[in-house]
Amino acid sequence: MTLTQLAYLVALADSRSFTRAADAVGVAQPTLSRQLRVLEDEFGAALVERGGREGVTLTPAGEVVLPLARRMLADADRARTGVAELIGLRSGRVRVGGTPSLCIGVLADVLRVFHEQHPDVRLELVESGSQPLVRSLVRGELDVALVIVPTAGIDTALHTTPVLRERLSVASPASDRAPTTRASLTIHELARRPLIVPRQGYDVREATLQAYADAGETPRFAVEGGEMDAVLRLVEAGTGVAVVPDLVFAGRPRLRRTVLTPALYRTVALARRADLAPTHAMQAFRDTLLSFLADLSAGDNLPGDVQVLRRPDPLPG
Image 1 (cartoon, helix red, strand yellow):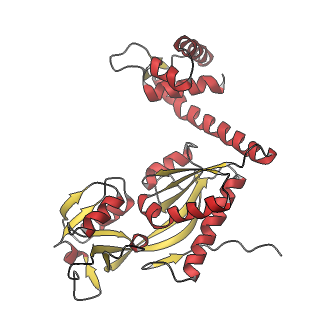
Image 2 (cartoon, helix red, strand yellow):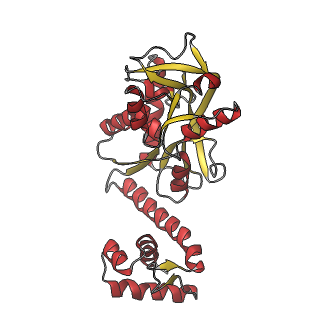
């Protein structure tokens, strides 16, 4: 069994076609087919169903091997990257994940600062919900990610460092009249207003709908779906209101923030795989993130009700 053969299996599972898989890995189709046969002989079982109407599909044995193959390939890639850092062939790579609201609210600035400090480190960014990010971390497709905790699957597989606690508040157009004469809104009052929520998979969407359910209310949806940027633009345009994390209010004068009562909070953590030691580049990213958040907190530049939970480690001596 070789890593190359496992890479061929992964490409085949992703493309469902021998032709497309061969193109993806840059070999001739007969070569890919021959190596896959060798791999099947090694396992003593067929890994793919050939000639089906829906293209190539995995057999039950193939479904067992596939996640292990993805993980082995990711671990091998990490090993190459780590050794390359140590011997000075290149300065490393960090694959970073973040939820859309965190990408808007803090991660974009952190990546800018990190790139200024480490211009030779290659940065790759993935924007998604916490559960998909957790799965990508476990499969080795990401190095670190900012996720909302608790999240399913995070307890045993990942090491997490809580870094932020932020409140969820109601966003409404600053050009309109305030949604209440008081400084806060209840869910019962919010339920009388048209609501904008992001697409499924957003942590803030689930928290909002759960708050409605707990209060025995049914949302009056104005718009469902879209990314966080679209949600904020719809609010600014006066289409409705939205429940959003306090971090996104920074630099958006066209939004009015009104707090919810009872308060809704969420905790943000920096997560990585627990069974792997961080590379030098990953450690540098962590240090940059914590220093950036500490500077924001010290300068009173955090919007709304946002608290920094973890400070940078003190310098030795």
